[in-house]
Image (tube, rainbow, N blue to C red; front, side):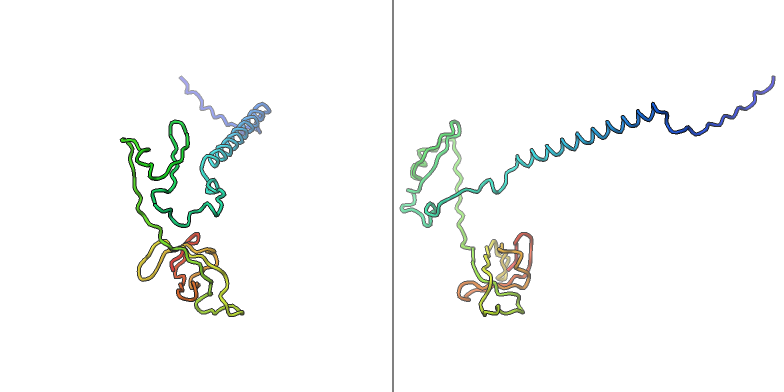
Length: 195
């Protein structure tokens, strides 16, 4: 029996896809483009919704007349005003602080905060860098606010300084009639400095 001859077939490269295949490729690309566009729109609307959900600091801005700000505690202290909001109804009632025991239920938890406010806000005048002197008029220039946050030791404080961008390392500030002076020794972010 004779052996079959080896058949060798050479496939020629296919010419550019047929018109039917070209239409399919274009349609597939268009559908993919539409899917990407829809996904982008969905992500954009989700982002807008999420940014609306989170609180902004400006949400807490409100007008408070200067005559409504307590400058000193009322005497006797238990005669200070107390506002009560009833959770179930949302009703608001006004009382004196001395009424607090009558407002509390036996199951209520009362948490006391005995922290004290540290008078740490200082207003001074910018003197310039350590090597610089006063301005041409011979007087300190810009008004600078320094809010002391916490002591770091060795007469060094962590503080918030406004305006922060102007206060570089080496800048000095004089407070009062020159009774107190500080120098910026380290610069942090968002107005945070070590003085």
